[in-house]
Image (cartoon, one colour):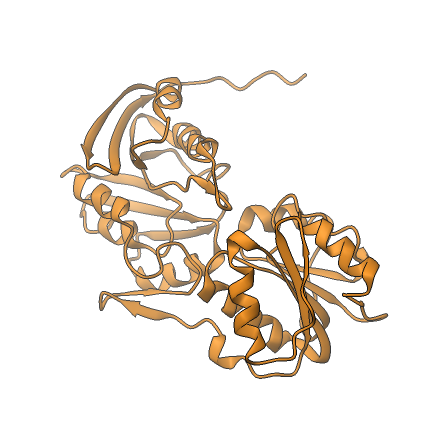
Length: 331
């Protein structure tokens, strides 16, 4: 969908690329086709590890700003969109073009409305359920820049990250359901800004806690929220992460959306990843929205699992005795 708008913008002249200089593309997602852009001049900027790993193959080590032009791939939240636009405005040389692209369901109309009060915005181009528009760099957007903010008087978050305004209710329920004797080496998959990690580290028997988080901004504030020496921070995709040694427990509130689309396969991949990193007597503590169909994958990955707590919206699942699955032979 994004490539359709990008191709149309280039074909119609709605986007004219500079003949020289770097072109920054902020937060494209896996599946976005950037081949219409000059590959040797493209810099992809994203803090989401799976997307970073995907694009770095074609667009290695990004040069530093200033850039000659930029394309901002709009994130879902309004604050996150503003922060990303502000970053582009600060990193594109005055006079360069900043293009904004996004789906209607991701708030592109709101973003363009916000911009019209600050810059001269080109006529928007509509295609594939989204819009594309641009403006000339030079305006000051420092008031839109991301800055840590405090919630509940004890946590720092950043705009655009998951549950930035308050601890997620599912995570709160999971923290309350953890066993009294939680101990040993623990992994927190999809650790976010550190709410569950702080609760886990209240247990004196915990020897090490691996916080695994794919979103760099969330991990940045997690480092500020968690100062315990037992914590280790990993910018990594939880579905492929491997700890330095097997762990005694995995605690997680996995995501279940890919963009705006529900994707239970993502949570299932978290469950299988937990199985692979657990010691033979290890256990998984998982919170999930009640409607998600995880029972089959839990039975495939563990010998035992049951609901340990729940509400009308969430269930906390305790799974134990991970099933050993030998590595498959190479073809």
